[in-house]
Image (tube, rainbow, N blue to C red; front, side, top):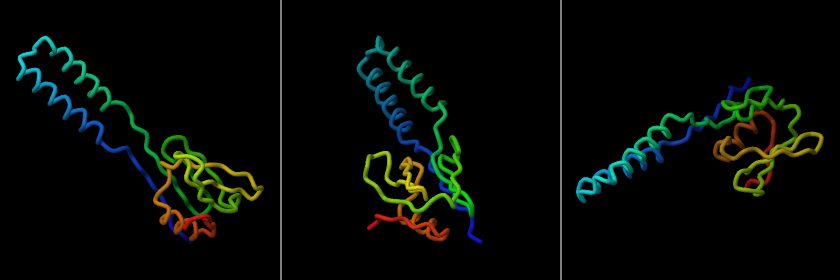
Length: 137
């Protein structure tokens, strides 16, 4: 019996820290330059930063158990039976898709790249379940 594998990737806080840093610089410039007529700009930038912080951020990832591969496991879960998957294929079709699922009936479906762990980890997890990942060098 193989353990359940879960991969979650939440967005970082880099954009928020950048906005707060920019807001602090803007406020300092307004104060140092005695440009108090621009204080409204500071309020608008501060409000936009606060709104950005409060907006929900999607959590990306997959879940693999003994019977299913679950894509977008924490947003809009879609369960794919492992018995339906022939193999996974590395693809360079676009920046959004690094891996394609190839079904036993020869249909293919791209997987959103942000949902997937590092390719080496993916190969190991799928190999433990008997599903090869092809096209990886």
